[in-house]
Length: 250
Ligand code: 13P
Image (cartoon, rainbow, N blue to C red; front, top):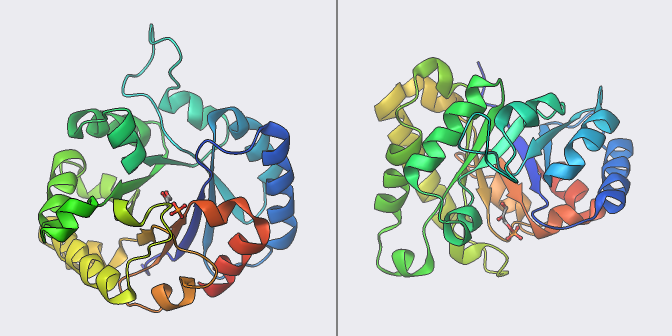
């Protein structure tokens, strides 16, 4: 099985429903035969409408989070089963903004990942170090701990539904992109960790995305690296023209 190349957007907390529908409509019309998988991560309230709109198109839909409990008295939370029922096929988990602003722990993320997989969702699992950790040369230890803490307990069968996204926190929304060399080096390291855990073949089949100020100008150079299988795009995914140019670069 060949590794899947992918460009995924993460809209974060941007676009009201009407704006989101307008952007999804524009993308649907423009993305006909992409050379890679295309996914858009939208706010929860957009999921049902956007999934229906994109049904049968080349674009898949992702939630940006899901609950760490199955169901019940958790006011305001959205379960993995609810996400799945909208027609969404993916969920982004472990984003640094969730870890940082909402104190999502390794254990909480493991629970979310397991519930997502149990409900038939594929997971885009984010890892990455903060600026101080990069400056101290600790990036490898950090991503290793994040993988061991939340996803390396999965079975080999479950692992097939995991896409990894390396997102150095210092590069997110800062305009400061990891150089292709920096990104390739750590992507290769991440793939070696997957090989140690799940075997060489599984590692070769694992999609590893880069995220962090990836845009229409630097995408081609990043995607040319052998261990960078695509991108997880924030800001540039909010503008159809830019997101389409990134898809074209993959
Ligand atoms: P930016 O592309 O805006 O830096 O965001 C990256 C990101 O966090 C995607 O999940």
